[in-house]
Length: 279
Image (cartoon, rainbow, N blue to C red; front, side, top):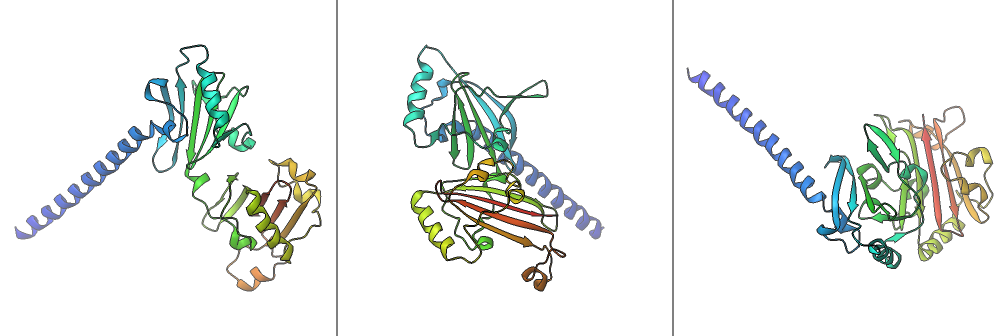
Protein backbone atom coordinates (compact mmCIF):
# COMPACT_ATOMS: atom_id res chain seq x y z
CA UNK A 1 0.00 0.00 0.00
CA UNK A 2 2.82 2.31 0.92
CA UNK A 3 4.55 1.67 -2.43
CA UNK A 4 1.35 2.53 -4.31
CA UNK A 5 1.14 5.87 -2.50
CA UNK A 6 4.74 6.64 -3.41
CA UNK A 7 4.12 5.79 -7.06
CA UNK A 8 0.95 7.92 -7.14
CA UNK A 9 2.85 10.79 -5.51
CA UNK A 10 5.61 10.57 -8.13
CA UNK A 11 3.06 10.47 -10.98
CA UNK A 12 1.27 13.47 -9.48
CA UNK A 13 4.54 15.43 -9.27
CA UNK A 14 5.37 14.59 -12.89
CA UNK A 15 1.91 15.71 -14.05
CA UNK A 16 2.20 18.96 -12.07
CA UNK A 17 5.64 19.66 -13.57
CA UNK A 18 4.32 19.02 -17.08
CA UNK A 19 1.34 21.32 -16.54
CA UNK A 20 3.51 24.08 -15.06
CA UNK A 21 5.99 23.78 -17.93
CA UNK A 22 3.21 23.91 -20.51
CA UNK A 23 1.61 26.96 -18.89
CA UNK A 24 4.98 28.72 -18.63
CA UNK A 25 5.66 28.23 -22.34
CA UNK A 26 2.17 29.41 -23.33
CA UNK A 27 2.37 32.46 -21.07
CA UNK A 28 5.79 33.33 -22.49
CA UNK A 29 4.45 33.00 -26.03
CA UNK A 30 1.49 35.19 -25.14
CA UNK A 31 3.79 37.81 -23.60
CA UNK A 32 5.98 37.97 -26.68
CA UNK A 33 2.97 37.95 -28.99
CA UNK A 34 1.23 40.83 -27.22
CA UNK A 35 4.32 42.98 -26.84
CA UNK A 36 5.71 42.26 -30.30
CA UNK A 37 2.61 43.87 -31.88
CA UNK A 38 4.30 47.16 -30.99
CA UNK A 39 7.51 46.43 -32.88
CA UNK A 40 6.87 49.53 -34.98
CA UNK A 41 7.93 51.56 -31.93
CA UNK A 42 11.48 50.24 -32.34
CA UNK A 43 11.94 51.77 -35.79
CA UNK A 44 12.83 55.32 -34.77
CA UNK A 45 9.69 56.92 -36.23
CA UNK A 46 6.91 58.94 -34.60
CA UNK A 47 4.19 56.31 -34.88
CA UNK A 48 1.44 55.97 -32.28
CA UNK A 49 -1.22 53.33 -31.78
CA UNK A 50 -3.87 55.48 -33.48
CA UNK A 51 -1.68 55.57 -36.63
CA UNK A 52 -2.07 51.80 -37.06
CA UNK A 53 -5.15 50.65 -38.92
CA UNK A 54 -4.39 46.96 -38.47
CA UNK A 55 -1.50 44.53 -38.07
CA UNK A 56 -1.28 41.24 -39.96
CA UNK A 57 0.97 38.65 -38.30
CA UNK A 58 2.06 36.03 -40.81
CA UNK A 59 4.40 34.15 -38.49
CA UNK A 60 4.77 34.49 -34.76
CA UNK A 61 7.20 32.25 -32.91
CA UNK A 62 9.23 33.74 -30.09
CA UNK A 63 11.96 31.16 -30.72
CA UNK A 64 12.28 31.24 -34.51
CA UNK A 65 11.24 34.71 -35.62
CA UNK A 66 8.30 36.69 -36.92
CA UNK A 67 6.97 38.51 -39.95
CA UNK A 68 4.18 41.06 -39.85
CA UNK A 69 2.68 43.89 -41.86
CA UNK A 70 1.37 47.11 -40.34
CA UNK A 71 -1.25 49.03 -42.35
CA UNK A 72 -1.09 52.73 -41.53
CA UNK A 73 -4.05 55.08 -41.55
CA UNK A 74 -3.67 57.39 -44.53
CA UNK A 75 -6.41 59.73 -43.31
CA UNK A 76 -5.27 63.01 -44.86
CA UNK A 77 -3.54 63.87 -48.13
CA UNK A 78 -0.08 64.72 -46.83
CA UNK A 79 0.04 62.03 -44.13
CA UNK A 80 2.67 59.98 -45.97
CA UNK A 81 4.62 63.15 -46.77
CA UNK A 82 5.12 63.66 -43.05
CA UNK A 83 6.47 60.11 -42.73
CA UNK A 84 8.70 60.72 -45.76
CA UNK A 85 10.22 63.72 -43.97
CA UNK A 86 10.94 61.53 -40.94
CA UNK A 87 12.47 58.81 -43.09
CA UNK A 88 14.68 61.26 -44.97
CA UNK A 89 16.02 62.81 -41.77
CA UNK A 90 16.57 59.50 -39.96
CA UNK A 91 19.98 57.84 -39.95
CA UNK A 92 18.22 54.49 -39.41
CA UNK A 93 16.40 54.45 -42.77
CA UNK A 94 17.70 54.82 -46.32
CA UNK A 95 16.85 54.19 -49.97
CA UNK A 96 19.46 51.48 -50.53
CA UNK A 97 17.48 48.27 -50.93
CA UNK A 98 18.45 44.98 -49.39
CA UNK A 99 20.14 42.32 -51.45
CA UNK A 100 17.65 40.26 -53.37
CA UNK A 101 17.80 37.26 -51.04
CA UNK A 102 16.54 39.49 -48.22
CA UNK A 103 13.90 41.12 -50.43
CA UNK A 104 12.40 37.71 -51.11
CA UNK A 105 11.44 37.46 -47.44
CA UNK A 106 9.01 40.36 -47.88
CA UNK A 107 5.68 39.64 -49.52
CA UNK A 108 1.93 39.64 -49.03
CA UNK A 109 0.21 36.30 -48.52
CA UNK A 110 -3.28 35.87 -49.90
CA UNK A 111 -5.09 32.53 -50.17
CA UNK A 112 -1.78 30.76 -49.43
CA UNK A 113 -0.19 32.52 -52.40
CA UNK A 114 2.92 34.62 -51.87
CA UNK A 115 2.67 37.93 -53.72
CA UNK A 116 5.77 40.17 -54.10
CA UNK A 117 5.39 43.60 -52.52
CA UNK A 118 5.10 46.79 -54.55
CA UNK A 119 8.62 48.23 -54.92
CA UNK A 120 7.76 51.69 -56.20
CA UNK A 121 8.40 53.90 -53.16
CA UNK A 122 10.27 52.08 -50.40
CA UNK A 123 12.58 52.95 -47.52
CA UNK A 124 14.70 50.32 -45.75
CA UNK A 125 15.66 49.76 -42.12
CA UNK A 126 18.22 47.39 -40.65
CA UNK A 127 18.70 47.56 -36.89
CA UNK A 128 17.57 46.23 -33.51
CA UNK A 129 18.04 42.73 -34.93
CA UNK A 130 15.35 43.32 -37.56
CA UNK A 131 14.73 44.27 -41.17
CA UNK A 132 11.85 46.59 -42.01
CA UNK A 133 10.48 48.20 -45.17
CA UNK A 134 8.30 51.32 -45.23
CA UNK A 135 6.03 51.31 -48.28
CA UNK A 136 4.91 54.92 -48.68
CA UNK A 137 2.77 54.25 -51.74
CA UNK A 138 0.58 51.70 -49.95
CA UNK A 139 0.98 53.07 -46.40
CA UNK A 140 2.45 49.84 -45.01
CA UNK A 141 5.37 48.77 -42.86
CA UNK A 142 6.78 45.29 -43.36
CA UNK A 143 8.66 44.00 -40.32
CA UNK A 144 10.80 40.87 -40.39
CA UNK A 145 13.04 39.33 -37.75
CA UNK A 146 14.66 35.91 -37.86
CA UNK A 147 17.21 34.46 -35.50
CA UNK A 148 19.20 33.04 -38.41
CA UNK A 149 20.09 36.57 -39.54
CA UNK A 150 20.97 37.92 -36.12
CA UNK A 151 22.61 35.26 -33.98
CA UNK A 152 25.56 34.17 -36.02
CA UNK A 153 29.30 33.76 -35.62
CA UNK A 154 31.59 36.34 -37.15
CA UNK A 155 34.51 35.13 -39.21
CA UNK A 156 37.32 37.18 -37.71
CA UNK A 157 39.07 33.99 -36.61
CA UNK A 158 38.75 32.20 -39.94
CA UNK A 159 39.91 35.21 -41.95
CA UNK A 160 42.41 36.59 -39.42
CA UNK A 161 40.42 39.78 -39.81
CA UNK A 162 38.41 41.69 -37.22
CA UNK A 163 34.89 41.83 -38.67
CA UNK A 164 33.02 42.43 -35.45
CA UNK A 165 32.39 46.20 -35.64
CA UNK A 166 30.32 46.45 -38.79
CA UNK A 167 27.58 48.84 -39.86
CA UNK A 168 25.48 46.05 -41.35
CA UNK A 169 25.78 42.37 -42.17
CA UNK A 170 23.73 40.38 -44.65
CA UNK A 171 23.54 36.59 -44.60
CA UNK A 172 22.37 34.41 -47.46
CA UNK A 173 22.78 30.93 -46.09
CA UNK A 174 24.16 29.00 -43.12
CA UNK A 175 25.79 25.70 -42.48
CA UNK A 176 23.63 22.78 -41.44
CA UNK A 177 23.65 19.15 -40.44
CA UNK A 178 25.64 17.40 -37.72
CA UNK A 179 28.94 17.87 -39.58
CA UNK A 180 28.50 21.52 -40.51
CA UNK A 181 28.12 21.08 -44.26
CA UNK A 182 26.48 23.68 -46.44
CA UNK A 183 27.12 27.26 -47.45
CA UNK A 184 27.86 30.52 -45.67
CA UNK A 185 27.46 33.74 -47.62
CA UNK A 186 28.13 37.03 -45.80
CA UNK A 187 28.29 40.67 -46.88
CA UNK A 188 29.71 43.14 -44.35
CA UNK A 189 29.49 46.93 -44.63
CA UNK A 190 32.03 48.91 -42.59
CA UNK A 191 32.52 52.57 -41.72
CA UNK A 192 35.32 54.48 -43.41
CA UNK A 193 37.32 54.50 -40.17
CA UNK A 194 36.92 50.75 -39.70
CA UNK A 195 37.75 50.26 -43.39
CA UNK A 196 41.14 51.90 -42.93
CA UNK A 197 41.89 49.52 -40.08
CA UNK A 198 40.91 46.52 -42.20
CA UNK A 199 43.02 47.68 -45.16
CA UNK A 200 46.08 47.98 -42.88
CA UNK A 201 45.51 44.38 -41.78
CA UNK A 202 45.07 43.15 -45.37
CA UNK A 203 48.25 44.89 -46.55
CA UNK A 204 50.27 42.94 -44.00
CA UNK A 205 48.51 39.60 -44.50
CA UNK A 206 50.07 36.85 -46.58
CA UNK A 207 46.59 35.32 -47.06
CA UNK A 208 45.24 38.30 -49.01
CA UNK A 209 46.38 39.74 -52.32
CA UNK A 210 45.51 42.57 -54.69
CA UNK A 211 45.62 40.06 -57.54
CA UNK A 212 42.09 39.62 -58.82
CA UNK A 213 40.59 36.14 -58.64
CA UNK A 214 39.30 34.37 -61.74
CA UNK A 215 35.68 34.97 -62.72
CA UNK A 216 34.73 31.33 -62.16
CA UNK A 217 35.58 31.80 -58.47
CA UNK A 218 33.97 35.23 -58.15
CA UNK A 219 30.82 33.82 -59.76
CA UNK A 220 30.09 32.18 -56.39
CA UNK A 221 28.87 35.63 -55.31
CA UNK A 222 25.76 35.15 -57.41
CA UNK A 223 23.75 37.67 -55.40
CA UNK A 224 26.46 40.32 -55.63
CA UNK A 225 27.56 40.63 -59.24
CA UNK A 226 29.13 43.99 -58.37
CA UNK A 227 32.10 41.94 -57.11
CA UNK A 228 33.09 41.37 -60.74
CA UNK A 229 33.53 45.09 -61.35
CA UNK A 230 35.56 46.00 -58.24
CA UNK A 231 38.50 48.17 -59.30
CA UNK A 232 40.37 48.40 -56.02
CA UNK A 233 40.19 45.28 -53.90
CA UNK A 234 41.87 42.54 -51.90
CA UNK A 235 41.24 38.86 -52.57
CA UNK A 236 41.50 35.65 -50.58
CA UNK A 237 40.95 32.07 -51.70
CA UNK A 238 41.58 28.88 -49.75
CA UNK A 239 40.56 25.25 -50.03
CA UNK A 240 38.94 23.84 -46.91
CA UNK A 241 38.70 20.33 -45.56
CA UNK A 242 35.96 19.51 -43.10
CA UNK A 243 37.55 16.73 -41.09
CA UNK A 244 38.69 15.87 -37.58
CA UNK A 245 42.16 15.14 -38.94
CA UNK A 246 44.11 18.26 -37.92
CA UNK A 247 46.92 17.43 -40.36
CA UNK A 248 44.51 17.38 -43.30
CA UNK A 249 42.99 20.68 -42.16
CA UNK A 250 46.40 22.35 -42.19
CA UNK A 251 47.58 20.71 -45.41
CA UNK A 252 44.54 20.76 -47.66
CA UNK A 253 44.96 19.42 -51.18
CA UNK A 254 42.59 19.32 -54.14
CA UNK A 255 42.14 15.63 -53.45
CA UNK A 256 41.04 15.90 -49.81
CA UNK A 257 39.31 19.31 -50.03
CA UNK A 258 35.61 19.30 -49.23
CA UNK A 259 35.09 22.87 -50.36
CA UNK A 260 36.59 26.36 -50.39
CA UNK A 261 36.29 29.85 -48.98
CA UNK A 262 36.55 33.17 -50.80
CA UNK A 263 37.03 36.64 -49.40
CA UNK A 264 36.81 39.87 -51.40
CA UNK A 265 37.25 43.32 -49.87
CA UNK A 266 36.14 46.37 -51.83
CA UNK A 267 38.47 49.17 -50.72
CA UNK A 268 36.38 51.95 -52.30
CA UNK A 269 33.10 50.92 -50.65
CA UNK A 270 34.43 49.31 -47.44
CA UNK A 271 32.49 46.11 -48.12
CA UNK A 272 33.66 42.58 -47.36
CA UNK A 273 32.18 39.66 -49.31
CA UNK A 274 32.70 36.23 -47.80
CA UNK A 275 31.74 32.82 -49.19
CA UNK A 276 32.30 29.41 -47.59
CA UNK A 277 31.12 26.06 -48.90
CA UNK A 278 31.67 22.46 -47.92
CA UNK A 279 29.82 19.42 -49.22
